[in-house]
Image (cartoon, rainbow, N blue to C red; front, side, top):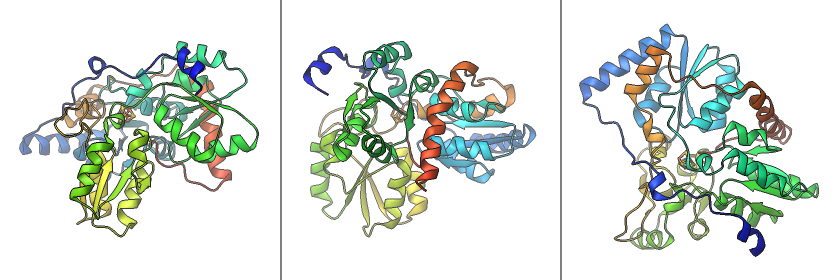
Length: 359
Ligand code: SF4
């Protein structure tokens, strides 16, 4: 982004006051067992399937696996939802994931354990302001990350995930198109650097990934010289520069399983460790430092909104049928266009669309 563009773009990064405390559900073993049994019964009774994101609590991921549900990144969760015969999908994740599931599966009932489970990227990209920004740059193709509201997607030409963003940017650049990117500026800059695309960037960031610090990472690497560094591209550039692998959630899980190393330092939400341990039992996983030595952090490598999903509220929504996701049909129709464009691009390029955080 040029200096003049930076001057007109106000920061859309959240202040610490806008970020809730990360509260992980604590359950005694007896209550946990009873809730799991109740949820299994309710899923069957309601002809419902649980789909959970990699960043949610391991209890939810285990439950999805045990009940024929699915654990993955957001778009893959939605695609699974389209293929599964259940009338109801319970999406354990954050709000934009529920909306994407509804957009792709309008005939299904989509429930979420907590409708307040938002995302800092989504919050930091208000649809009206974003639309004004697009209006100021009518010559640019509008490309948005999956981590946006349905209304923002409805204003976009393309939606991308972190695993396919590079391919789409190269494709559009080859066609001579200039891009307007939102909302994550770190991911946008990474795509820009890797592809040489002409991009202007919305000034948003993920509070979890932006907290990773290069200085603390360097110190941790000194203590673990053989470790491989795995980084999600929503992280700051200085952290990405230290990575052995930069990738989406699914790509980072694959890296742990495939790379010839015993120890990994992971710069993404620590909820992913559950899947990484399953993929590579016995390997050592370390959280990338979030605040540098002696400092505090806002999120401490765990998304406060993902943490709002728990067994108690999951059981409650299945029982009451509350917390149903609704998307205005006119917005859904428009938002389906950039999503469908991405799916078609992936099909024609024989690529799996894996891994928005993907978040
Ligand atoms: S971790 Fe994912 S869901 Fe949470 S704020 Fe960051 S991008 Fe949003």
